[in-house]
Image (cartoon, rainbow, N blue to C red; front, side, top):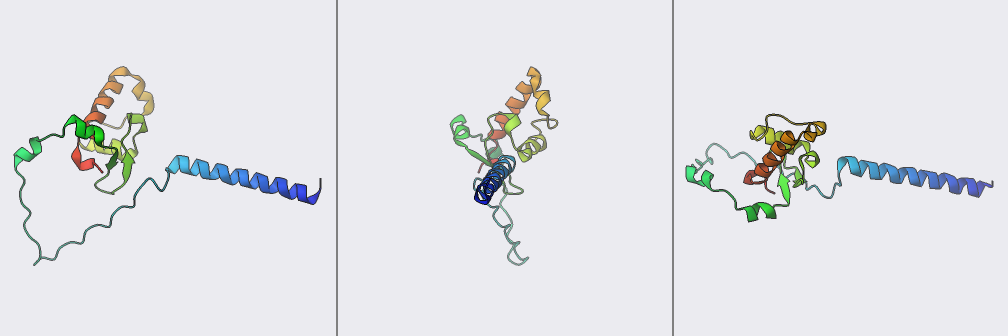
Length: 141
């Protein structure tokens, strides 16, 4: 083999390895363009500028979004970190923060492993909890 052929084979191997590295990185971490940057936290008001916040009436909590509104939601946002995620079609595809939020909201008693979802009763419970979670407006993007 000549030097040019060896060089060409070497460059091809490096290109293939780099392409595989990029594909694996994107698959594991998600595309960076899909997630919006978290907005900076709002500045705390000074003591003299602080105004009392109005108290919401309990009737406002009773209002639930219509099923049509819930179906229109395409992305969810973590209110604590601002991380965005697509609405999962199934629990096993949900991001970790969504699973933690479902436990925090009392919809599930714990985070389930994918192997536990093979039980029909657990799978039904998790699907119902996911549907209830999608209806929580504070997580809508």
